[in-house]
Length: 329
Image (cartoon, rainbow, N blue to C red):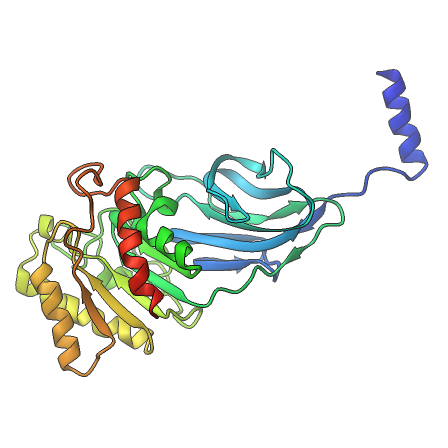
């Protein structure tokens, strides 16, 4: 032990100490943030809604995240399956070091919702000494997915990242957002169902009083809407649902004038006729870039984890059916 200490001391005195690791701040220009993020603090970026993620290229053999407090997250390096991590402070994403060279990292934090209160605050990266970040290859399209717990990935093994929306986007090599949270309706109801007709336009995950989202911050090439599963349980009538769906489509169009909009039949078929009729009303008004997608039969018999929510197999089946539709953008 004394000999090792002496060697370390001599190394430092001779100026031969190992070089310090490289660091990238939260506002590093090479990091791409997909989804709705709060960037008001350049030292700490906070994701909103489900499935928001960051992408960045880096050199070297290791990469670590700088987190403020404890959080659950998933990370994928070089396109490999997402791995779960939990921790605070410095989180090592490469316990087994990588081969030297260029790499691409994707990180998605667990959504703060329900009883989960993790601290999803990105404070930067730590890399090998002399390593650098670089911009990951640009993706050609961005798809916005709008929904409830199904679109947030509830009951799937890795929540948002094992959801049909995330999977379809990754399969196509598109960027993708999931503006979704458990229990959401399309319609505001007397018993207090959180509703996209008022909260989709907000920055944060449906919290009342949140700032309005600035829709100029990104452009969606397509918007996929999967709503209505919860409205039925809150007593929304068919005619009311249809009218509100048509109004929602119109307002989404005002935010994304050139996007293709896809209205999915809810997987258990609630308000299927009303959803189709709302699409037809928009088509009759001259908006031919709105389509109804009949999802009948998309879920296999063993594709549900309960009576409503797809399991991993179900989400994969939906992604496989949806990807060719979105691939035609």
